[in-house]
Image 1 (tube, rainbow, N blue to C red):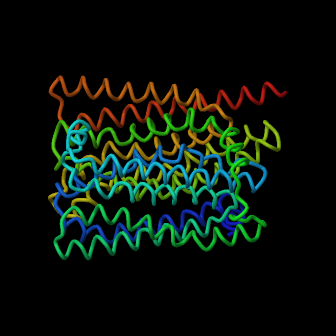
Image 2 (image 1 turned 120 degrees about the vertical axis):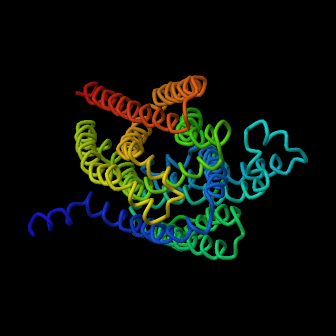
Image 3 (image 1 turned 90 degrees about the vertical axis):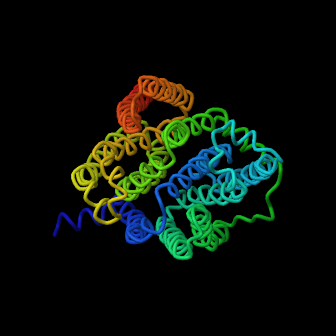
Length: 431
């Protein structure tokens, strides 16, 4: 009892439980719906949705210039507000530019990019990218003020609205468009949870949107220009690293297998992302504060957080490794057997994703985006070359996945080691 009380009263675990409770409930809602959703749609439908989602996520990763990552960092709340507004304005401009491209009267671009299979749904992209960008920006605003309860609530609203859309549309047999709209509707639902709290934060801190002016906006744009210079490209590469299997499988293998792979990813997300996101948001909120105290405090927090990464990732990794096949084939049906088989190797993506998020935020806070960019370029080149070799040697679609998992694990360890050396060197320099 005393141990449980100590854990519940610990600032990190208290915040983590608050954040993860919403994420876990959101993932539980999705989990409960999938025995029905997986039977209302075919693997091909899920493959189309996966290809659209990958395109949507890659574009979202660059739409804000990555200025939202800087929102928790400034000491002054006014600067944080300008960074938030800047991020929103850039995402709006990006959505307008994307609209002009999407509605071009030719399909040559979609064919060139390997997106012909989702060409009929590309008109939804601009709205989806803007809503997702706006949501991501406000998440970092909430992280700055430790509004973890609001973030938690938004996850539940997102999952609920997405699930309702999928189930209703599935029963009406509308096809993959329903799965795609579910992504967008879920993002919109998340925004509803943020709006009131954002305005309340502005009032509480004495900040006014009507007083936003051009000069300080441009000043903050310049002060944090390392984010668009390095984090945009690095963020794009980082997202591509995750989404490359989807693109490669859809173009060079089959959309059906892509759907199988996407179902396994959903299970990995339910078991892993529900923990990774809360951890990384708390880490991003706390590391700048520790760094302002002293470089030694930042180093100590890095080591403690690494220990937590290991602890948090063990159980879901082992659980999915041993039970994932049975969970998928029993709950979703025999048509998803391939997805079940993939869990035996893909469970390793859970600790890999933990470490990558951990290293990613460390590089950002200590302003070493250039080194992270070099590592991301190396990782994506390694994946591309490996995929090409496997494909040319006649490797199966499963071989592509095994290759991807192996590279992800190795690179996550390497990036964590580099992040440790950098934060150690920063401490040593000030000693």
